[in-house]
Image 1: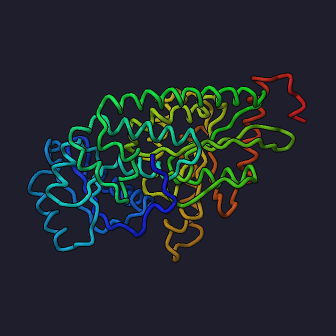
Image 2 (image 1 turned 135 degrees about the vertical axis):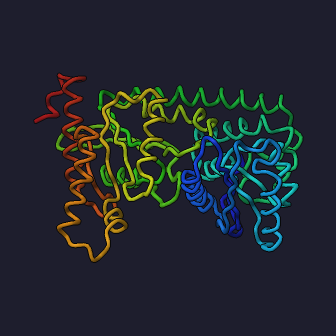
Length: 397
């Protein structure tokens, strides 16, 4: 994996391309393309135009069909500064080659873009190995059609791959590399497991949630530590754990990598060891960006991922974050305070019922309702101590 300090010499202009087909509605596609634009921005590109096509199923050769491809080509000819086309779904190696030939610009898909972001964010040996493994797994089935794609070593989105030797590599070499990385990760996992065992008999709390919902900010507020937080997707790749003490009650608080829709399955597989922190936790803080228009869909993605990890039966406190932005984005200035309070009360009552009282509404950046969050957390942690470590009564007085 090439780790560049200066990833982009300039902001790349990009077009986004999506498809409405049987498993995907037009409304869903627009939501996905908005998220794709944010992903592109995180990677260092600016989306200047969006195209979408309606087909019963993706075209096997060009994904979107010859006619739509010609329309995109004509647009690119009029806008010579466009350098990359980003597709919202996974493309095969042959599709990438065919589309690049037709458009004469670089073509990547959503998985390639996410891998690119992960490659730029990976700092530790574990994260770097995990991303590199996912990159090779992504490349392996595309080798036949990706030679031209792999020759692009001039920089920019989608070119931060495992290295220049990919041009000469074949499936056997890639498989050997995958095997080597898996062995390396197994050793790292063994060390991480030993470190987790040495933490002692503490209740463990893990922050989980969609990417960019404010987990790292909440981590900083609760633990009074400096964990990297940024308004970009996947600001955190590595799990960060801190020992925290509330009212004489110690516990371990962990920040984890964010989830996202259409996360490449290679990344899910590669990062399962990082998510062991979630599986071994006693309590989950599911952080939700309630100001996001599709926050309920994001909650569903997280819940589905937790179910896949076997964590759906753990105690969960749903933390609705960014309430200050929700109020700002939802209510007009002329709305009277009484009506506003009524609407907020109805929102909270709904989620209190849905979560059986296991939720709280805060703003981490504005420090709103943080004391209440601490109180809810302390009560849940002490309840867990009484069940798991009943002899640790010194925590409760």
